Length: 82
Image (cartoon, rainbow, N blue to C red; front, side):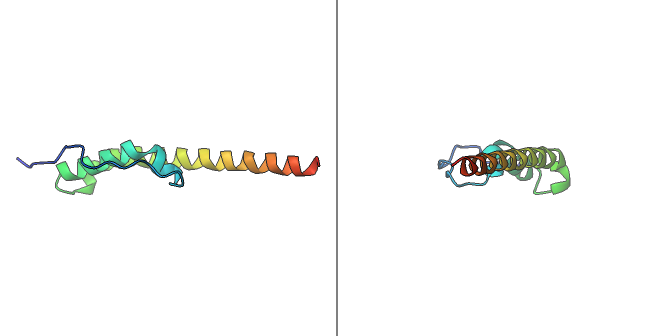
């Protein structure tokens, strides 16, 4: 039986300037690490966790891009109304 450390360890708060995928997909990233540790670092056995993280990452990036786009449109509209 392989021992996998499951303690809390030392946690740090997310930085404000962290990329969106890091902020929103930490749970999936931890699941990948857990799976790899549990399965002797065989990536092929953890593909479902990796796909979940990739889906989360894609959603987070798209949401951040949409937010930035709307913010830029608001700023350009405000600049034209002066």
